[in-house]
Image 1 (cartoon, rainbow, N blue to C red):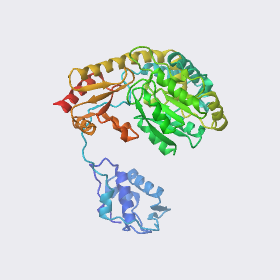
Image 2 (image 1 turned 60 degrees about the vertical axis):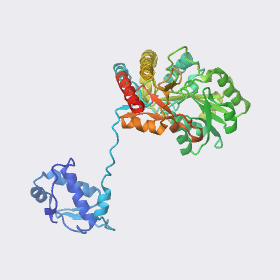
Image 3 (image 1 turned 120 degrees about the vertical axis):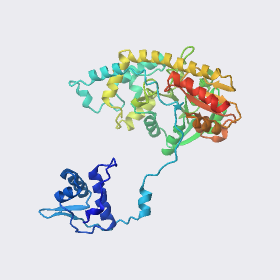
Image 4 (image 1 turned 90 degrees about the vertical axis):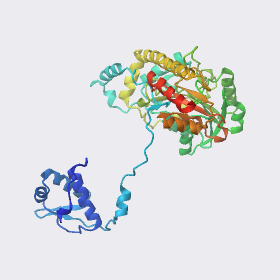
Length: 468
C-alpha cells in the first residue's frame, strides 16, 4: 500500500484516526486496495505518518468492526473480500458533500407563540424538590408506575382543576401522558374507526397532520368570534368536535356561554357525539374572572377535557393530561390499560410536590403578572405608532392577532418582516380549508418568550418595515 498518497489535514476538525480510516475505506471501496492486500503494520504506519500508535490502532479497529479488513495472527492486517466493489466517481463524491444552502436572513426577534419566559422559572425550588424526590429509600422510583400516571399527581391535578377551572372529576378519570398527541392516540383507539372529527378552521395546525397520519377522518369547521359556528358543525357531519373555548387558537376569542350551550346540546342530540376541550393556556386571563371550563357545564358525559403544563411551566416538561368521562374510562381500562405512562416517575413526583406544596399556584400568579405586563407593553408599543393596525383577541393567553392594513398581502408582510430580521406568522397557515382565509391579512403575534426590551425594539422595526 502506497501511503504517500495519504496526507493529514492539520486544519481539519476531523480526528486524524478518522481521516486515516476514511482514506483506507475509500481505497477499498474504489477497488484500488484489492482483496487480501496486506496493510502496513501499525508501528510502521505510525512512524511513517509521525502519529501515535493509538491513532493507527483507532483507524484499524474501526475498519475491522465494519468488516473492511481482518487481522491475521502473527501476519498482520489484510483487506476483506467485498462481493461488490462500491463504484465511486468524482461527481458522486462531489454530490455527497453537504449542500451549501443559500444564506437566509438572520432572525433577531421571533414572535413565536411557542415557548415561555425562561428568566422566571423557579430553578432553585425545582432543583431542591428533585433532590428530595431522588431518595434512595423510595423504591417506587424504580417501578413502571400506574399506566394512567402517578395517583398522587392525578389527585392534586383533580383538585387544582376543580378550584381553578370548575372541572368536576376524580383522580381515577385522569390519564397523564407526554403531550396531547399521545392522548389523541388513546382516543383514536377508544372511538369508532369511522368517527369523523371536526376541527376549528383556523385552528392548531398540527391537529390536521395528526389526524392525517393516523388515517382519522376529519372536517374543517369554520369559526366566528364565538367559536365553531353551529350551522357549520351540522354541515360537517362530524361526530367529535375539537375546540379551544377558553382562548380559541389562533383567533384569541373566548367562546360565550350561549355558544357553549349550543355545542353541548349538539352533542346531547345523538349518542356517540363528543367534544374534546383543549384548555391549552387557560391559566392566563388578564381581566375579569377566569371562564369556567366547558366540562363543568357537561351533565351527560360528553366532554373530554385536555390540559397541559407546557404553557404554565415549559414545553420541555412534556406533561399533559386528559379527563375521560366514566363510561369512556371503562373502555380504556378494558382495552388500553396495557400501555405505560410515558412520563418518567421521578418527573411526576417532582411535579406533584411542586403543586402540592403551593409552588405551582405562586408561580402561576407571578407569570400572570409577567405576561400581562408583556401583553400591555406589546399593545402600547403597537398603538403608539398610530398606524392602521388593529389588535384582535381577548385579554388572555400568550398571543394576539394583528390586522395590518397597509396594502400588503399576508405573504408580503411576513417577507418584509423577515428581511428586517423579524419573524411573524400569517394566519393562513392555520387554516385547513384555505377557501375560508380572510381577504384582509392577519398575523399571529406571540409574546411569552421575548423580553420586554425586545418586544419594544421588534415592534419599532416592524413599523419601519411596513410603513416607512
